[in-house]
Length: 284
Image 1 (tube, rainbow, N blue to C red):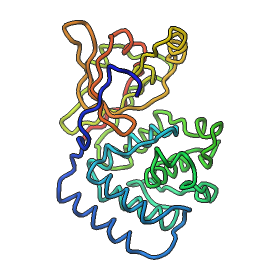
Image 2: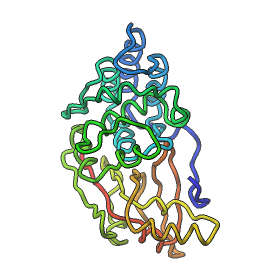
Image 3: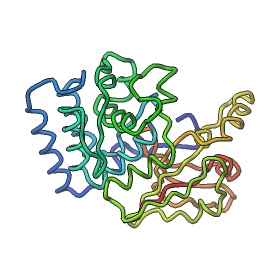
């Protein structure tokens, strides 16, 4: 995050799962850590288990690093918050067999993806092994044209693109929501009236589709001009933690989750409007 107007709160906030759910999830991971065998991936079991314990207690810690996995990351932070046992069971089975289920959705990682020596990659420094395994397998399963089976600089960003239909499918499959409404438009901005009416809270989860340029303001005029062009299309998913409100000064204020952190954002209404393309709304 490069925008000075977006500041994260103290570490550890955002873990809202009931204590008994977290305890049961920790037990699942403890059993997984004691199992023998290398599993279906070129990953380290102990490192995956340690990270899963962290994600149970702090589901907002899941992060994509420099990978184009913001859609899966948004889904997993929601799933871990509301159903940690199901989420870590998904991970344990995926590690062992290369196949698992996200709720009602079968997830199978391709052999090419499972052969990636991910721990040796510089990507692993910013996106831990467990996070990458869970997210990449889901992305790989849903891709029909270009498999998500590489972390190369040129192929990964394209294979990792996540359109609203895929995110809606994943959220619905978790079984957390009675309905998931797609109120996005990847081609047209949705406007401030829609943003101000988003029903955040009370068991409702809102995943907003934005141009990432909403969250940064480069110092140079050249880079700001570039952002104006890039923001013509959406390229990032965030999870709203508060309603979108208009301040007395005519600015926009909202709390949101992205890149493994909770952020309090305040920015000009014009910039928010320019970068906002709607949201997926999941209601319990």
